[in-house]
Image 1: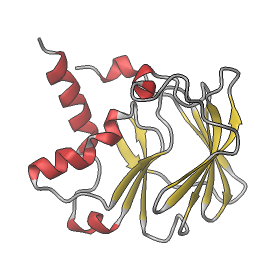
Image 2 (image 1 turned 90 degrees about the vertical axis):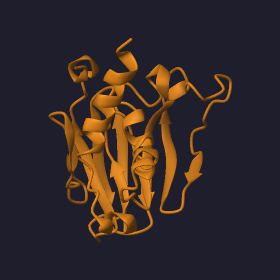
Image 3 (image 1 turned 120 degrees about the vertical axis):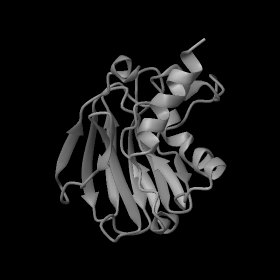
Image 4 (image 1 turned 135 degrees about the vertical axis):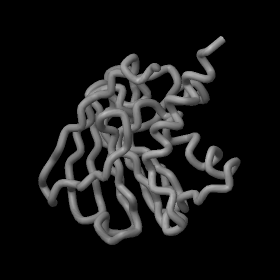
Length: 176
């Protein structure tokens, strides 16, 4: 069976495009739109197993399952809106209780970021969030990346009031 090996190769190709210099240990890597959540979730354990430098934290704001619109609210805040809403992929719901719905206005506090749900889809999934970082995005603490042409690339957030749309990722095109 090749499937696990193919998936591992696919995830590794993305992981290899994330900085692994020693300075990454002091940074939070923020992925705007990894193809699927596995691209973000496996970075720390893969690097730990290989003895390679790991980021202080890895965050992902949405997956690339659909186009993602990102609007800059202020120096520390991004409004994130995937065209199909959050939790649209089965893998994103795999460890969630299907009866435990997130609420409008609900906040998820993390050490360097707070997520607030600002809109819900018709079926009760988050449609839009505000991602409030504890430091300015351009201050050097965050390594902002987006998925483009089969790898993670540096992401420059728009200026305050501006927005950018990241194109959805064709998952089938990633398979070897």
